[in-house]
Each structure stands twice: as structure tokens, then as C-alpha cells.
Length: 281
Image (tube, rainbow, N blue to C red; front, side, top):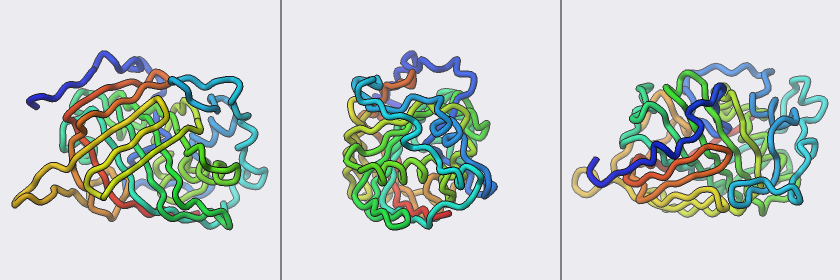
């Protein structure tokens, strides 16, 4: 692509043995077992991942939260169902692949790997009696090869404006332990790098927009112009974060991420935005 560049050398985790994503695209026909906790929950809530505030790509000890603050309750850890919940809004992603990203059709990534920044803007949401309106979630993701190999690494970021109950709810939903579509996503997870609470801004009109994740990541994107000046959309792809909704295909004027060894800085590559609705358990 003329004018596009990708800092392939910036992907420092090409040697990862168990790469995964706590965000995730997921095969829409995948079949998650209702009593199986996600890998995200097993790692984050099991106490082996970094949980804290991301500042310049690092979790600072003074702001670190104990993993037990976000531990599953005993009943949940035994496989019982979570509270009823629903979240809806817009999601976006920008990655190192050429547009249209071949990963969504189960083809190999453009560069042989795919590194991405992903965001969810929750316009309306509820977990039991806990309101999640207006909060944001994001992730940095690296897949060292074909995404269907389920060999991703990722770090999850939750809006620092969320209170303790909201943080717990969002971690359970987007970590996959609360069921629904994110539980299918969690099937692709092998190595979760951390859970952090940072300022997250997400602005979009459903076609173009911007995402900023603390100091570790950002993206600005515009839609690709289609026939008659319209937009280009894709729907029904087998690998989808938001199944059932058309996604607007765009290009990022810039997309970057640098945390936990997941690193990229790209221009002119794939971007996508779409409505999403998840519910569970």
C-alpha cells in the first residue's frame, strides 16, 4: 500500500510461547462451555497477572490493586452463573494488517502476525443492579500467526472512572467469566499480560473516530470511500467481535500501542468500527 508503514521490528513479542488476547475477535460458530471459566479469569483472578494502573507502559506499585480485589466469588469459581448483564455501544479495532484485514475471513495476517488496539465504548450497560453506562474498555493484542490457532497475548484496560463494583463487572464481562459472546472470545486466550485502570477516551460517529488508552495506546481512523462516496462495510465474517452488525471498514491515520512487550506503530492499515451488543450469562 502506497504511503503505509508498519514498524514490524517494534513487535517485541514474536517469541511468545503462549500468546493470547483478553480482547478478542472470535469465531461466531465457536462453542464455549457454560461452566468453563475463561483463561483470562483463570490468570487474572488466579493471581498471576499484573493488576494495576498503567503509567508510561508500566504498572506502578503504589497504585497496584490486589488481584483478590477482583477475585471470583466462591460460587462463581465453582462454575455457577453470573448476574444477568447486558452492554451495548460501539467497538473499534486497528491493526497491522492491510485493509480489509484477512484475519476476519480466517486467512493468514498480512505480516504473518497481527497486532491490534481494540476499544469498546459502552453507551448503555448493566450488570445486575450495577450501571455501566458511559464507561470504556480497551485491549492491546498480539497474535503471532493465524488467529484461529488461539495463540494470542493481550492486556486489558478498564476506564479508571469506574467504581469498584463497575470495575469488577467490566472485568468479568470482558474477561469472559460472565458468559455471553466474550466467553467465546476467551477461548482464544493463552497469555493475559495484565489488567489496568487508566483514562480511556473513545469518540466515534459510527464511521470515523479516535481512541486513547492512557499513555500506552491510541488510534485515529477514517472510513474508506466506497461507491458513490459511500462507506465500505462487511457483515457475516466468520471471525467477528460484533456478530450480526455491519462493520465500517477504514484506515487508521495512525495506530500505536506499547505495553507488556506488545508494540506496534502503523499508518494506513486496517481499522474497523461497528455497533456491538453483548449479554449474559
